[in-house]
Length: 428
Image 1 (cartoon, rainbow, N blue to C red):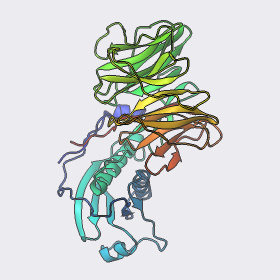
Image 2: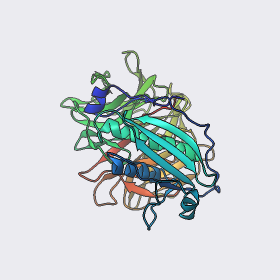
Image 3: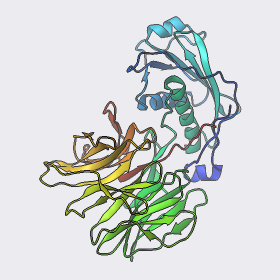
């Protein structure tokens, strides 16, 4: 059974933005998974990894699984159990439901074995290619891919480790790994705002800052080429791709800002979507079926979130004002499962991240510490990245929306406008 493939090594060495991976064919059992009580996080022990870069591989696997918030990684106080033979009873005593063994082979692959401790047997085996320079971006991506597959074997939910987050720092576009490593500017770009991923992971759209105003640019991360979208007035901002990859919608205009759509494949002129009659309409986000768009509009005199068909028909007010003295709701991001839209809402202490259910329109506040803005869903619809000043200045944080556990992703310099990539690895 094949799993992953990498983009060309030159791209990975330069920027490490891989599109879909595929692992080597391996001997592999049928995935059965572990049996554990609903609502609990099964204990997982990652055994010592023999050979070169052992500590780094083990640390990455353990950290990735812990960051997924679906398992508990065990680090026994008494040290590691003996590794000569597997004593399932001993691992059970320290609370492990699963045992992960990893070995770096002479051919450059990471050989991973998953044991079901209670059943005292192996339930999955697979090899994952580690390409590029050891400990480099592409090499690390291979380890992250292994972590995601192990999480799937255990829980039935694939992890997010083989993803990346784009963000803006000092008007430059940066990229950072899911675990906070490999933060650096995207090469070859000038001033940039509002990055957005294409569903293939190969392209990025963003707002380019120029002396004559702003314009929307599509960057091919493999070829290193750019394509500029025709201007609509002096302001051209907040681009977003449709989930089917065929359409790009952005906001443009002069005194009034409207949404416009363009074909991704063709160089057609932008087509107007909204009719706001002088209002500001921006920050679009597509529904999973690519047929509708959520966006921010101040057509009522203050910002609220609306939904429209992609052709501009059937406009619907999503958020409503009840008790707020200074209502302001903006920057929607539609979840991949179509059930919720995240957005930012003004409160007395700044902004907070909220979600609204598309089924019953019930809202839920996810943040309260500091001021929090610009939510972007992860591919699992459980985690999101957002901008927060809770550490003293704006940084990118990751939130588990089920447990409300958060972790700081960026640390040096102010960071904002984050966008979570699609999974950059795809099972085959």
